[in-house]
Amino acid sequence: MALLSSLRKLLSGSGDVTSAGRPASSADPTARPAAPSAAPAGPGAAASPPSQPFASAHSHGPSQVSTQTAVYTGGEIVFPALEASPEWLQFSARLLGLSRLKDVPPSAGEQGLMQRLQGQRGSQWADQLPRLPAVLPQLMRLARRPDVARAELVQLLSRDPSLVGELMRLANSPRYRPEREITDLSGAVTVLGQQGLDQLVMGAAMRPIFHQGKGRYGSRAGTLLWDLSERTAFATRRLANAGDDEFAAYLAGLSSQLGLMALLRVLDAMSAPSVPPLDREGLHRQLLPLTATWSAQIVEHWGFPPQVAEALAPRPGRGAASAVLAVLVRQAQSVALRQLMQPGLQPAQLGDWSAAQQRCYAAMDSEFGAGTPT
Image 1 (cartoon, rainbow, N blue to C red):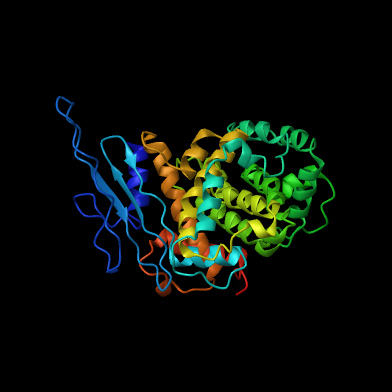
Image 2: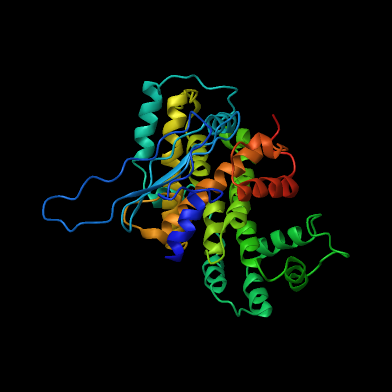
């Protein structure tokens, strides 16, 4: 019941729902309707509770973020496919170095590329990315322990010099403003704070993956994917309710763009004549749900907690716990994308976002400042 309560709270935005469990009507006339209820049970099947739609059809100002809609059918949460908002299409175009997209379906060349990409499995997508530090599986196990000692963390982290370097850089950054230069790992752990250190370590471990693109597409993308991933992870942590698995939520947000990163690596490995222009809106709309699935396959191959993969690409029959995290990640990515592409907006410019989403956006403005250059 607590999980379903969390789900209702997430999906209702500010919690303003009618007695039927549906959100109060939005002022946005373009809001999409909730996904259809599941089909009736066949003859002889046990009667199930009527399906109850939970929807958050928010108006998000000039560049509307995709609506978040789910249907609860007596113990199962059904999600519609991800749909690309105008803001996402703008981001996707910029990622590939395009000034604008053509509002037409994919070309024959783009469809051929899509067929090739869809044939790759999770391990093949994971192979496109650098290896994760070997200490990460142990770190994720330690993250589940409330009594982990600082000395134990320091001993584990010291096994990976590159990870130590990232943590030292972070501890000495303006964000933490140390009174003196931090020169050892134990001091870095003290400055960073043991609570939440697992999340900081995961960020330090994942960051280099998004900064190794040296080819044509990787160079064009620059830090865009990392900027969005870092913000999405920040937002999942801010939007999580008490009792939610904050570490899994953070991991899911941080991993949400791995599929796109792997795609850039694939494109960079192809000869220039074999890559179509990639400038058609229809292609970019197809890529959003596909790359989310690829992200899920990558983290599954890496051995991340199962609920992380389930949150990135929700599937039927996963239950309320996975649904709560999936809704959280979708909402977090919407807020993160808005702040990255349009930083500095005032609450009145955010449409009918919930108070929690508005606070998250403001906190992100404070944490990250201006978004990507226009």
